[in-house]
Picture 1 (cartoon, rainbow, N blue to C red):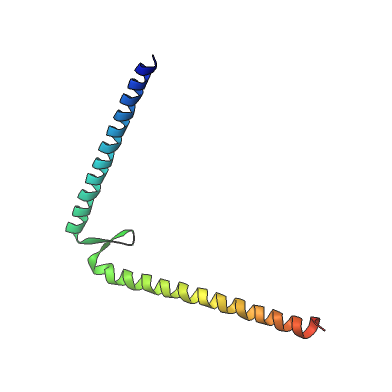
Picture 2: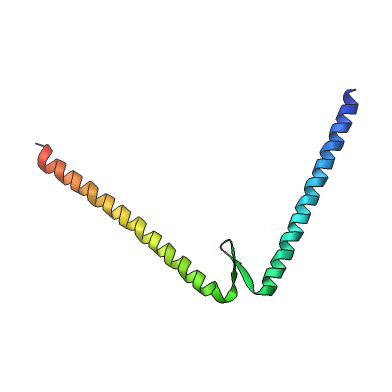
Length: 98
């Protein structure tokens, strides 16, 4: 009885593997078809979105500007934290330490 169950289990596992492979292949085919259709329409996949080629430069500029803003915000935050620590150190040294 044990060998029969093993054969049935292995057959089921093989069916699951075949289904998984077929599903993966069909998904890949669908994605490639969609990609070809979008390219024919003149769209480009950029940063997770399908963007028309004529708007691609504006999207790049906006993303570049957003990256610059985030960069400056992080540096301003670090500068403010350092200034705050310096003021605390100066206050403790001046008023609390003998």
